[in-house]
Image 1: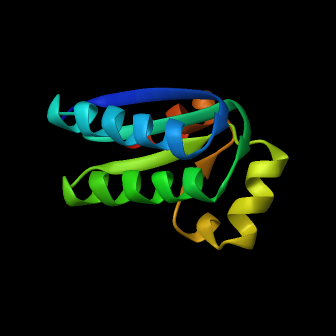
Image 2: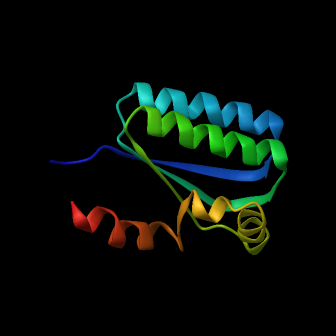
Length: 108
């Protein structure tokens, strides 16, 4: 059984405005039938609280569609924010896309 994997690459600042775009993108991806969504945050410089909220609602959308959401390439600032807010317990994070491919796609 092959999974439909979609990679969403974010960049810049993840704030309320970008967060709303993210929610729309995730919704479209799920409607298109993706099973697994990887959010690559390599180019994300900063996340504020509303950006964090949009990641959480993206996770809830994916889960309610019986999909899986993963995150990769988080900066030190984002990693610290994840740890402070306990988001590191919610999001399974990978070093980068290669790490994700090795660990997640290899088990298919």
